[in-house]
Image 1: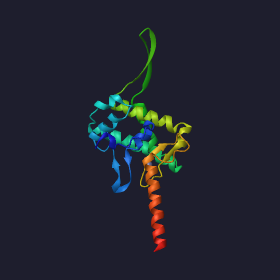
Image 2: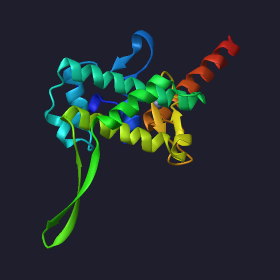
Image 3: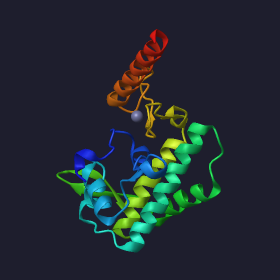
Image 4: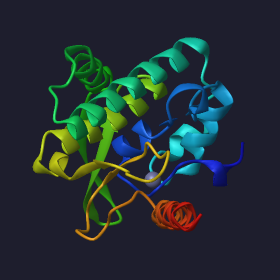
Length: 193
Ligand SMILES: [Zn+2]
């Protein structure tokens, strides 16, 4: 698997994270399904430079998948208009608590600078970063803009930041148009026969 194969849309971190669980049934792909995939995914985005060097031992990898499934659960509940699962909320909140954040004051280059620091191991810091983003998304009116892509066979979530955006990606919109075209053509052929 290469970086360009990853389902990255430029969404907010929580949504990108949920989208690592792609598809349903035998066709599904877990883009965090192994330590190597997790390293590739966290190395590909602009949000987690520190994450590039992590090697994802089994315990950390299990926690990663647990958090991912919880954030995926929140997205799925949101688009279904359903109440989120208590376990999913608990998992996200535990990740927030796993690496408390503090903003500290420094004097640098002749001026005050604010530095955000987190406590906790690098994995906990990363999970807290993702969980914070989920709290910011679902804890605000932005949650109303979370959509599931209606593209053929697509299961991606996205945040509808523009009212004309109807698909996760232009390629999905293109595939939907193609599918409509073939259905119409087939119907015409069936009608003519
Ligand atoms: Zn799509």
